[in-house]
Image 1 (cartoon, helix red, strand yellow):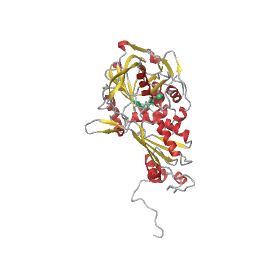
Image 2 (cartoon, rainbow, N blue to C red):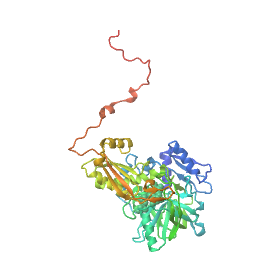
Image 3 (tube, rainbow, N blue to C red):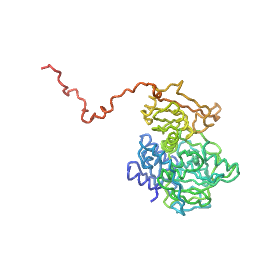
Image 4 (tube, rainbow, N blue to C red):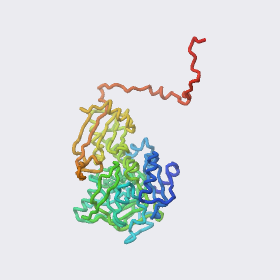
Length: 477
Ligand SMILES: Cc1cc2nc3c(=O)[nH]c(=O)nc-3n(C[C@H](O)[C@H](O)[C@H](O)COP(=O)(O)O)c2cc1C
Ligand SMILES: [Mn+2]
């Protein structure tokens, strides 16, 4: 059986039963769903939450399914320890999608006035959000010049039951394509895909050079071709095993106010007039599950981080074969820590530039460290900066690298009268590696590894008691 959202939920419930909780009491789509997730977040818990009773909808909803690296690693058939390298390896061998005649996503077909989103359980996530948002929707569109299909996961603002605002970030292919239709004064057919296996979702978030390639990337991550089927109202192809697909069209020159929306850096930054989708059809499974991403919180960042780490690892390896590990920390996705077995001094900048070119909109800082530093331990990374980095030689600032503007508030200038102006963003490289051989560098303070391994803590450690007889000193009798 091909993999999809429900096969993954079944796998989680079987292999990680504590990771999946069910809520059968009625909850409001406005803040009710995210309130439960936020309460658990305060306790440091991120189970997937399956809501069976969202007010106003017959359709169940799952949120936080993709909020932990453990579950994302499971979706790739690997462990957290190996997930970045496995991601990069899989990415290197794309598996093209397979066209099929029909599939479960066509079990229900709604067109005309039935094609409205009111029956879907679309949540409002955070306090100042401009309304309900589809936060998990991967949008497919064709490049009007080449005809190639491109996918990206973008935020979708419900403006009316048949109108959905969409925000394509500067630098993303989605925006290039939409601007091209705009120049040609042509309507842009689109389809929003909601709910599939997390490997497919990650494939649409992956940083792939050039327009298109996301379906083949998704197939590579999934380990089998994604089955795709033709849309009802356009020639776009959508996954046959998706839960829900919303088809529509973006008319050139038509805009509506979109946002505000709580974004991954933890702020409300971007809102204003945006293109919007006029819904032309909805197709779905008869027992569809709505897949929601908890925006502006852990799930948003974790789901965004692994595809970036994997994509960066691959591109860095092409220029620095000794790369050992890459971390784009979920709590500060503007940073990237790269460790490698150093061969020459030029590698630091090559590795950093590969990272910046892969993730050019969001990274502000790349820190390079030697392969004895664990990039997933920020304390070690900072210790390497503190003890190996020299600002006169190791710091490179590149002015005007990205932007202008973007989601990071530091990409803007804010004024007293409340207006703001987008600025170009500088980025920074910190080379915290030791100098190359034959130069000498002091060794790390360490107890011999084999001595540590030989210690049996269970046998040695006893509870402390002041009455426990210590060894009698010699000569007391
Ligand atoms: C939860 C989540 C929400 C996202 N929202 C947006 C968005 O609203 N707009 C956008 O341009 N990119 C967004 N992204 C990032 C894109 O999906 C990602 O960069 C993708 O590679 C863009 O593809 P493209 O360059 O083909 O357009 C989001 C990513 C995640 C994980
Ligand atoms: Mn793309």
